[in-house]
Image (spheres, rainbow, N blue to C red):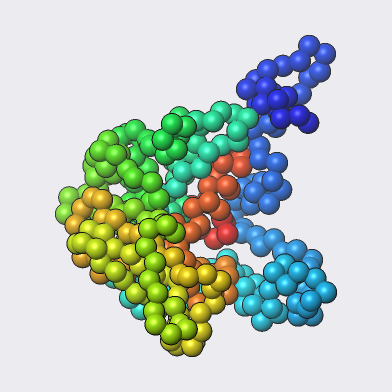
Length: 329
């Protein structure tokens, strides 16, 4: 169907001689997103696997080697993911701190046929146990085509973080000491006041902008090895560059294709030692239970924002999406 007709029908335009269900045009055409969104009401997470994934032969030059991972990687991915979705914890970080939760702020635009400013806001919370929770916020005109950024109102920001902290209390049942917000785009004063008002008295709130800046900073070492993974370049007490990709001494290799690009970390609101922030950030790169990797480039609070957003907006008619992170990967 032409894009113009889909856009008109999604907006509620009817035809003179043809009748149809307007709601169907609010759904994503992506089968995977639809399926994952709809099974949430049954409380059973699923794992979608392509038939080619079960091929027992290793990649060869006869076909694209990037289209299929080595057999050992595929076995790891399937077994670890199924174990996590069945309720187990494959591993937990040794550097976690009790009473601390990390929250990734997520924005995802709805289908372009609905409007180019409409978006869904959400939050991903990761506990010190390593488990994840997803909280969907409100739909609204959060995207600005002029600035290319998302911003919500004070009340929406307060309501979103309030739901997150209520879920934390329900799951953890222990005092909360610190909340770290991770996001790609800056938050404004109105949003900060909303987030801050949601935090109970005595709970510290730290807002951190995280993004990869390929044209800002690179480090080159003498010899044939790139910069070490985990290296931190502290610019000032509120800004630093963290290399989450790079040479891994334990493995004796670098598995990348280019000069490692660092994460730029900016502590925009609140106070915390930049080294502690970087340590937490590096740990969060190792909570991907869905892929056989030593560590991701992005922390899990940021790295899964697109995947979570796609599932959340795939079917806006689902009123009670599951808060469990395992339903979104």
